[in-house]
Amino acid sequence: MHLLFLWFCYCHLCCRGVEDLIKINNVTFTYRGEGEKGIENINLEIIKGECILLCGRSGCGKTTLTRLINGLVPHFYDGKQEGYVKVEGMKISDIPMYQISEKVGSVFQSPRTQCFNVDTDSEIAFGIENLSYSLEKLQENIEKTKKDLQVENLLGRSIFELSGGEKQKIAFASIYAMCPDIYILDEPSSNLDVDAIERLRKTLFFLKQQKKTIIIAEHRLYFLKDLADRIIYMDQSKIKGTYTTKKFLSFPVSFRENMGLRTMDLYSVKPTQRKIVKAPKALEIQNLTLWYKKQRVMSDISFKAAGGEVIGIIGHNGAGKSTFSRALCGLHKGCEGTFLWQGKEMNSRQRLKLSYMVMQDVNYQLFAESVERECCFGIKNPDKELAAETMKELGIYEYKNHHPNTLSGGQKQRLAVAVSMICKKEILIFDEPTSGLDFDSMVQVSKLISKISQMGKIIFIVTHDYEFISLICNRVIHFDKGTIKDDFAVNEENIRKLQEFFIVS
Image (cartoon, rainbow, N blue to C red; front, side, top):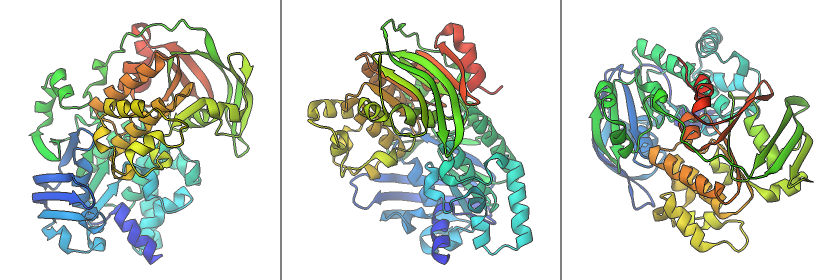
């Protein structure tokens, strides 16, 4: 149990009491085994109660900067460091992790990396149990967490049954229960639906009112525009600009996009006009019902799709979107109904040969020792020229000799998308493909998907990303309460339907 808690300190890095200042002084850090710097010549001071937004392109150094504050650099991630980082006057490199963990709490981009139990109740309680809180205090903190974060519907459930967004909520709840004074959040909205993002925003407001210090590394910026006290822009491992929110909002859209940053106002995003697909319907699904451990999760799912369509699959966390995706490509066994391709019925094995899925957590599908090998892994007679061209299109060619696990979250996402192009399957499913992607990467992925669709492929995109749907999809299927609630074209006429789902007034 003590060893478990030591690892928990690495991942949760939480708890009580922080004073005035975080100070980063002339820090340069290079990860061991990599030729590139994580960050270079960083100077930054953060006062108690500030909310700091770290933004910039994927791989710019945001995550490394957060690791310097919570002690994962240098205590967990090895490398060469110059300069120093102090939290409450203490130099991070000189104090043990357990002392740092008493001051800083972190929520990581991938929630599965910080789960230590098989059920949600134990996961929320794990940290405070290991801090030897009294039973009365433990119960008090858990009740407060349930109430403040509204996670009652996730209690008493298996961690393995949760969606990515639901796991993210539990990860945050496990931190919140321990009452840290410094919160570090790395892409906290990446797997959340619109309602969960709004709850996160309100929770962050609540933390600000308590004078908590909050550092958020994010690509989705819109929900933080009235939260951030300072916006710190990073590029190529350096801090290139520090702005007030008012100053940042005054930048023209083109200026922000040239910085590789997402929108600050969803209402300004309009659907891209796309050609109407007139091809015959190649895929048909009839009366599909999906079960998970004898519990019905979806029913009465019927629709047709044509080659060249890019179909957005939307719905709240837990609506069954990922389960549907796995069923479509033959990975989910609990199915009743009919799948037809070119008028012929397909079993699960045939669907598996016909389709390819980019998972929500791409770490599950990265196997090779280099980015270049990953692009061709498991593909018979791979097209090496196509692999190189695709890597260049997605901005990862320069990392072709790197191990996939050394890439940033956004770079891993682009690598998985690259494989989808190279494998030449007929049906492609992307589960949250823009998780961890900056504006440039989102546009690169959209261009690649558009290119694939022009080859006559059928593409499904499971997403909570309004910007991406507006950019690439020509059709949306809305899942709600276990069935299809709506099925409509993405155009100016239906923009209100999209805004009603994605934008909280």
